Image 1 (tube, one colour):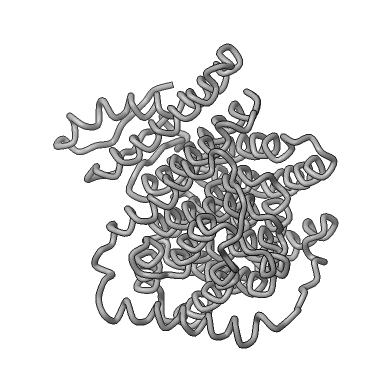
Image 2 (cartoon, one colour; image 1 turned 135 degrees about the horizontal axis):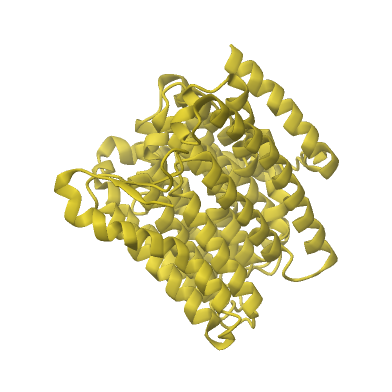
Length: 492
């Protein structure tokens, strides 16, 4: 196996050491995962150390002027690409995983938990630098196994069923994806992403079905609410903060590489943003509401692929903070929480995250929403503004919960919040150009209108959507319908 690096002469001094650094960085999490069983007393330290190195790597790559391309084989198109979009997703993975490790620091998690967490972390990183379909397939399959083992970590009957359900749906989706990848290779004798442009339409349909399901997009993502809501809080934070983005990232990269793919990605962005927020507005369970809103927010990433990295970073920090916060509430039922004041510090943490995801200034959610809205096509604007309004309505449920009560949080909760909420404040400086009068007024009006609708309408309603399509025996049927729909889209 040879390693070939594409770079300009001016980048020679940076590219050579960076090639070796990248290969070491990819392999390190898996080496540490196997080493944890030999050094069980160092499991937390080793795991946290790897996540911090990933964060450093993301910051270094973000400063590179040109993308780094590594060709891992001579002729099969097996390549890695590290660019600005990769850096944002990798940084998200590093911060969310570090926060989860700190959250679990004093909760007597065994070495097995940290082994799977760091293996998951490394596999997610691998996805974010893949530029070919076969490397991506391998990384996604490892993610499925590691996520399954984390979901089933409590070993309860419920967790085992939820984990098996997740694994079955994921594996079926990846079978479709693999057929698409093989069709790309048959047409081009290469697995490179660019080959999708010359591949038959069946390849696009199969690959999209696999990635849409893996990423929890539109009706293909209806496996997600149960999986994320029934997992332990730190696992939910990992799943919603980073794992589902492994299905999103390839779609973003394909949209940026192949102009013909861009409209498909944007369409599913708007569709899933509206579907998820429609469920989230009326959901009475805290964790299910957050899970449905993950579906919706993934749509914002796809709606404007060129700036999806920044939105992914903001969403990952927010959703991890909210799932960890929800895990410290005395109940999952919003009606019960309205009658039981929570401790003020916990309310502040939930409120900051809710303000950010609603687009409030001074937090990175504001800049991410402004940047996304500026990069929409005209036909997307109405739908995405409705989704933004629905977001403000949904998170009014957290913001207007009563505070001033008594309660304790898990020992690692506040160190995790320092990373996640601190990241929301610091990331606010990534797009300081957003702070114009027009840009500030519009989100504030949207939030105010959302709060009015919540108090005047939503809070008084008791609507419960049927969970028919979420049932296990219907999830595969939904895949079949989506495949038919994808064939219709690519043919027309």
